[in-house]
Length: 259
View (cartoon, rainbow, N blue to C red):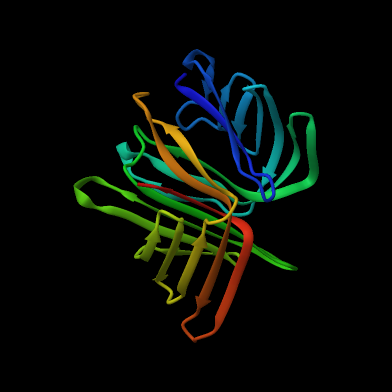
């Protein structure tokens, strides 16, 4: 089936488990170009502007969700014409609603926090590294960091990181990085145009690490994607005057690597 809906269960201290159900193109309903509000539906599953729902039955397991979310920051990480785009309409999303897995129900308002995004392209890239971190800061507004690298034609590499901090957006384009795809871990540093220095470290080791088979867009086979949606992250920010701020999360980050 060329259309897939995914759900992944990350039990505390246990091995992640993915559930993937396919649907024919005839069951897909998607909003048109520039049409608002956005929607993408397949069977009983759908993503809309500020909500998503799902209902999967895979290998004897029943998974359902009905979630609403809102945020204060959105960003387009990449938009490269025929290559595709990566957009994050909800970078600091707060989720409410319910999730049910084999009769176990989780509900809350709020239920949790994270990120919601859209990716589009005529094929998967040969390699990419993507990460997002959500930093809770007590009584202060939350901060988020999203970073993306991937291969482009003619040997070029796209690199970009966007920080949302204290209600301001900071863009970093020249990432100096070290990457270990076997563990996986990713570290990088950069300087924004306003002089803000960023040092970031994502650690995808641990029980949350999941290696998932992705279906190629021409349906000719699969390839492996390493993902940890319970990764840790730390960030050090240094302003032009030398003042430093440290942000950390033990489980509020996601790290994904291919290639």
